[in-house]
Amino acid sequence: MKHINLLAMLLLLVGGLNWGLVGIFNYNLVTSLLGDASMMTKVVYSLVGICALYEGFQFIQKRGASA
Image (cartoon, rainbow, N blue to C red; front, side, top):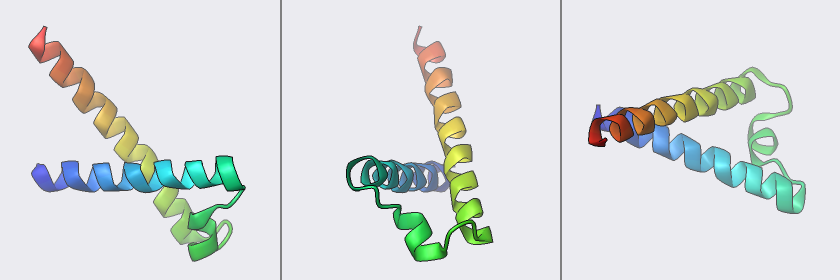
């Protein structure tokens, strides 16, 4: 489980940094590296979204356990 948490956090950092670059510099690092609308770009974005949901559920679960 520890490896899944680490992977989820790393992908969320990648996603957050990418959105920061898009917002500040109008530069999308993921599409620059993997291509616009390529299969790998879609995979990366999908994994970032899945990791966000996973971390959100983990947060809710931990918060409920401490209440």
